[in-house]
Image (cartoon, rainbow, N blue to C red):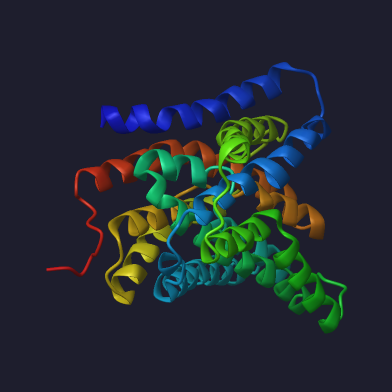
Length: 320
């Protein structure tokens, strides 16, 4: 357990450092703008490209893995969405609650923790999950808002918006370019490779620090009652469903299964708050969801990694 704590503590310490800086320094959240540009458009895309461009092509075509992990995330979204509807929250608010349980911080936190825990082999499953989970969220948000009357777009405009968000997202572009480089065996060397490595190595520290600052500038005023279901759905049920879905889908490399469970166990993404702001619904509660799941994940993610390391959670739950 001490080794697991030692492995994961630097990542949460970076979030805590950012949180402390955000509370102490008197700067508005807009001061993060250029750091976020560096993270989203430069550093993380460089990391995804490096990981994928050096991967054998056959590893990138794991349809069963993609279907199982994406379907599991969709099931979690449906569960959270349905619970919110039972509470009579309305479709727009139910959408945010569904995303709160299904949309993990797989961009800022995922790559760094997965690579540290499972090595470079975790890069491919992380990139695949990121692409397809985000595609799912990009589709569900405008679709459900349109159904619930919270969106003002026509069907054609909505489809155009979804496609634009998918194919202009810097992480997805980097993934496509990385896969193309793997197919055509284009491997940057020398100064170019060193430059990409420098950018990739900066991705996790900058992303986690920025995340901490962002959390600090959105103080928790009260704990919404909905969190008593959203938190266990996100931090416990999501990785459990992913694990079972992969077990049903077939035998996969343990590193892939463990990476998928780890990403599913991560706290709610800050993008859920951004989406809530965009549609002006459930904004303060979305912010509280991000903060509370992040704090709670210190314990739950550590416990999951310990269970994986000690063999309590095998790669295939149905193996004899």
